[in-house]
Image (cartoon, rainbow over all chains, first blue to last red; front, side, top):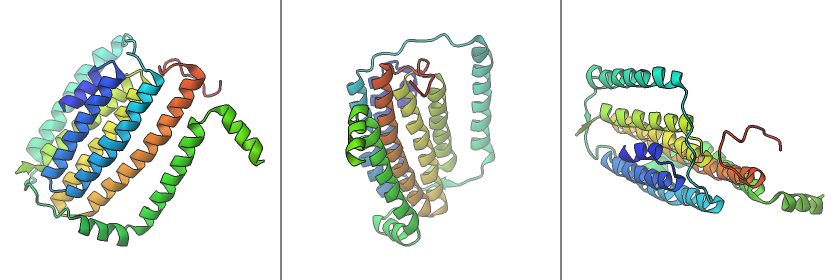
Length: 160
Length: 100
C-alpha cells in the first residue's frame, strides 16, 4: 500500500514504475498468504517480470522526464478531499463492522496447479482459446503501431 | 487468520489509488501504470473471494485478467510510442487531437 501511494506521489515515471514493482511483489506475497501459489507465481512472472520490463523499456526509450505540476482546481480540492475521506471512512466502517464473514485461514485454498489446469482446460477451454487469439491480435497490433509509419507504408506497398 | 474484509479493504485502496492516479497524473505512462494498479486491486479481491468460497474459478479468472492486462499493456505502450514519435511529448494535456 505504501508502494501504491508512492506511485501517486512520485513525479518521475521511473520511480513510479519501481514502486509499482513493489506493489506487485507485495500482492504476490498476499496471494501466497491466501494459498494461491499458481496465481502468485503468475503474478511474479507476468506482472513483475514481463509487464514491468515493458514499462521500463518504454520509459527509457522515450527518455521520460519529470512531469510538470499543474495547479488543481479549487473546487476539486474543496469537494474532493472531504468526499474521499467520508467515502473511505464509510466503506471501511461497513466492511469492518457490518460484514459477518469469518476469517480466511492462511493457506486454506487448494491452489494446486493441477486443479487449476483441470479447470482451465476443461471448463474454461473456449475462453482460453479465445485468449490466445487475443494475444496474437495484440502482438500484431503492437508491431504495427510501434513500427515507423514509413516502414508500414512501404510494407503495404510491397504487399499490395 | 486474516478476515476477508481486510483483503477487500486493501483491494479497494489499491483500486482507489489507481483511479486517483488515472485522474490526477499528467504523464501518459504513469496513467497506464494506474490502470495496472486498478487491475491488480480487482485481482486481489478475486483471489480473496476464491479463497473465501473455496472456488478455484476465481483464480482462473485472475489468470484471464492477467492475460488481458498483458495484451493491453503491449498495445498501449505501442500506442504511446507512436504518439511520442508524432508529437514529441508524453503530457496528455498536449495530446488533444487524434489526427495530426
